[in-house]
Amino acid sequence: MAEKQKMFAEERHRLILDEVNRRGRVSVADLVGRLGVSDMTIRRDLETLAARKLLQKVHGGAVPLPKTAAEPHFTQKQRLNRTEKKAIAREALPFVEEGHTIAFSAGTTTWQVASSLQPRGEELTFITNSTNIALTLQENGWEQIVLSGGSFRTPSDALVGPFAERTLKTLNADILFLGVHGVHPDAGLTTPNIAEAETDRCLVEAAQKVVVVADHTKVGIVALAKIAPLSRVDVFVTDEKAPQDLLREIELAGVRVIVAGV
Image (tube, rainbow, N blue to C red; front, side, top):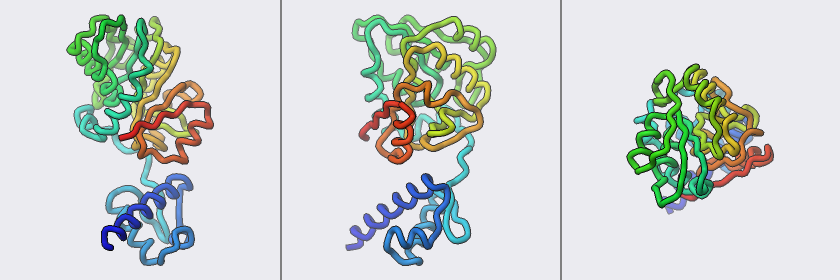
């Protein structure tokens, strides 16, 4: 019986988070009416979710956490949501075709896609501003790799700045796998770093097809610097934990959404 009650609590928590993220604010009274449980139960749920840093309690209800959290370093991000990122990479790989020129932005999810690519006799050319991705491709046996050059920066280990932008503006790619900090139906694609946003924009402009790869923690996030609107995105690959209501809004913007099963 205790296990059944726990399952009910987890379901309430998911529904509460969906409501908070969709509406921007929820009240205890509204949640009591929607979920059919007591005021005390809802208050305990909100305390639990706040303790897990999934929302912020306010007087009479809850609001989402601030959407502009600090960006961790590449090596830290590699350890986050690894299962989801591997699943996303599996769904992204079929977009690679013989003879393609493939661009990768810096990031741990794009790195996961690149690391999953193993030579099988096909001819592929790669463009990236990520030293980590370039080295991984080389270690996997790929030869035609163009590294943009530019100023090295942390935390994402991306090459950015005027040298990187000048190089990327002279190149063309069949497909770009783009990693982002935030995907939002209204704000589009965003990142906390202004310099990296400029470089990512150059990659977007160089590509015939843009495939955004980002796990569920990026959906609904709005970071400081805008990369591109959703109208520039062809495909968005995420995982099954992403909020369904936001995915529907992204689809309504004309983006093909692929949800990777974990």
